[in-house]
Image 1: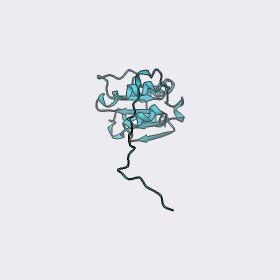
Image 2: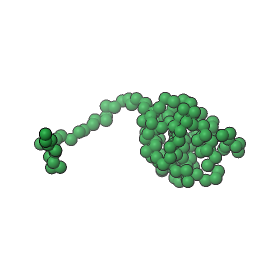
Image 3: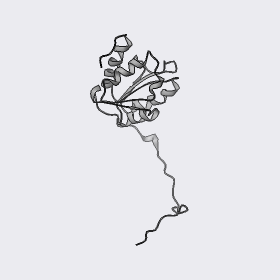
Image 4: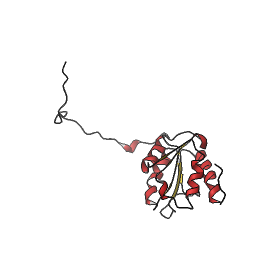
Length: 156
């Protein structure tokens, strides 16, 4: 039995372009995960080598509190957070420009993204970023990273 394979030159005779009318989009269902406990959460960080000696204990405290951690996703991880595949992302960026584009994506998916103090991200932010799938998880992560930032050594 032979099968016919399409040739690279095969095209529909008159394929119309697909046009999406986004003017009528009034509501977007949140897609971020519904997990609310750190112990059940998946954490992501872009590159552990970006953490300096003062900020590394902050990451380690949060890492010790979650179920699983993935590394190296960079902006892809923030997209995965918005779509429900990752629950928390923490990073230390060199400039705020590295993270500001994630803000509308995550907030419109139902998530929260701030600096490590819980303040909104701006052009004048420090480059520390914490994003979570929902407000409860974000608050839990903020509480957890506040411990090493206060000079207290976190329990393993």
